[in-house]
Length: 488
Ligand code: SF4
Image 1 (cartoon, rainbow, N blue to C red):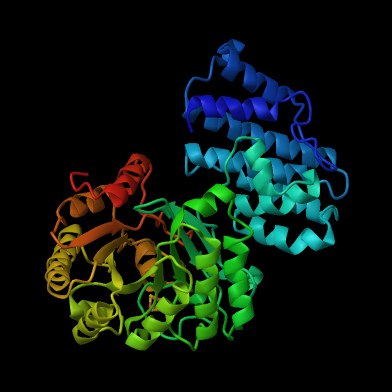
Image 2: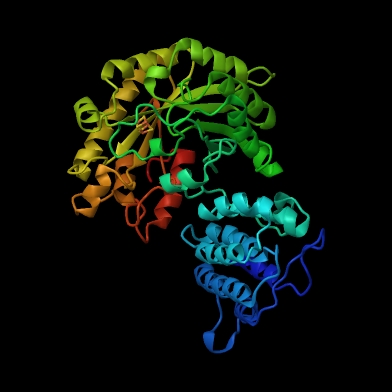
């Protein structure tokens, strides 16, 4: 967020008249603290505190203001069913995160929600979805839920009128969140990311959990139901996002959809095939710029027949939508991969996967992890990834399969062996600077390289791979993902 955008936000929140007049609500803030903040920001004066002349200073000031404002409103007692603190908090959050991914007023939003809920001020029909959104710090979800109730406006319309945008990052979920809030007709998470053309929509659908559930360090299989989810509900999850949660411009720019269920979407035992096929047809209809669908799966579920059925479902219309497969390999050394990481994928299976993809004209995204095991230092981690790049380059040249080496820096998820090693001081997550050095050495003729830059909200405190001060590296690697500029 630049300073001009920040100033616009402050003008909005101190507007003297309701800024949204439609429907029953409208909202504005009369608050001495925000007036003082605005004076410092807009007029460049502000007495002893001095002017605010950087976005970072603004972020800190707005965060402070939001906490005070929300606390004040809650303490003053808000009228029943008036949920403005939550809506304001969510709007401010959505703006702040553009300036600083770590900026958050969500603890204030959570406190406001607890008080409102205890006072019986949350209407019954909103209680469950609002609690679900608050628990996963889902600012986008809160705006979409609350704007119609408070302003008589669709949340997408509201942010458009305010010249703001909705957050594009993943919701913060965990196995505990899933146990308390998962619903069969709502996805676990979704977010937008930069794709080579336009943007990508990452959809994590809530289905029966991964049947393998043995990979070391994996918490993802705990983000799934024990029982199966029906096809109508799974299709409803996709429509909830593609039809009801994206703004018009967002829908128009989605060129790529990544379909995940934290396991294998090609495993009919966890994700019924009718849901996958009909869901693909619906996505192709709802997203006019869609060019590619990526299916996340284990290798053993990939068959020529299954790929051809998905391709047919996607290409009912006139446009051509290609299919890629995203498969976790994690470690190139097959002994470490299977004996220590328990991946259950031999080199023969990996070769068969590439040949099947070649026969079906499908692309491959092969996941590797940077430094996934305790005791693995940066030299060993980099060597493993460089050997993977060399082999994949040869295979891509031989088979013609478009292969992307997808490098995920390891984070520490709760309740895993890696977590125990981390707590015992026997493991430290990689630093992004080391990942960047590794990426710079991966240029090959026939493969693309992408870096995973999200821990999907699953890292324990201190167990993420972005250290304080490394935020600029995230932006650099995002740019690399788009442009493949290896001199990162
Ligand atoms: S296949 Fe994927 S979801 Fe299943 S246990 Fe392994 S890493 Fe976890």
